Image (cartoon, rainbow, N blue to C red; front, side, top):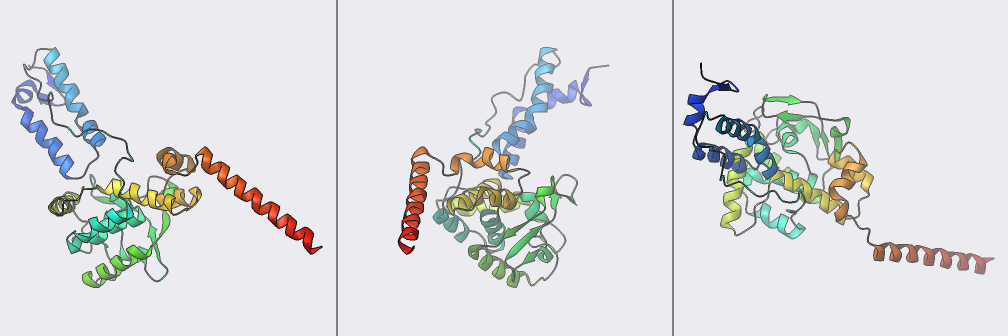
Length: 278
């Protein structure tokens, strides 16, 4: 009996070619998966074939010389407000609200897939994030942490898009972005359509996860305090927010000096006014 690895015979391992593994990587990239996620997904396969080559079970390792996306900093791709408007403007109308909610509300992909109209209060201007969609199990799941269940404000730029989307969908209940009222959208299809539109317009594509980072950067630039950002992003702790976005937050020595000097100047002015009034 020939040696088996993860249930696959060496005969079958020998049938796998580099183009087969490359196709897996390309499909994951087309779905908008993060480069590090793609590399991690291929890691078990790399281990299997490395051992198979070492043991002499196969002659060629199909996991070598793959064209994989480079792993860059998590916050490297953040769209500016002007760029976000441009990215949304050229999208297919049916997909515009999905990307707008990622860019202007920071929902995760699974949260976007599970979001229902019953959880979008346009009158009050808030989105209640109650669940996420597990793409592997194909079911709604509870948030990963207590912080994942949260209320996110609907900014003006997002409200207009959601109002138009709701009027177009003509649904008061069910999934906000579903293929139907009960069937979530296919992320790979949404990504392909967006990627095609952006390339045709000469724009730099962005992923849903990067759109979420963009929302965080907008909150920071707008001066929203760190505790509120932690809540809106659904982070388990404020430390997570600082770890992810600390470099984007104001805090240079020059700025600290200016802020303290301004505070002391105001305090001194108020003190002098108080003495004059006595």
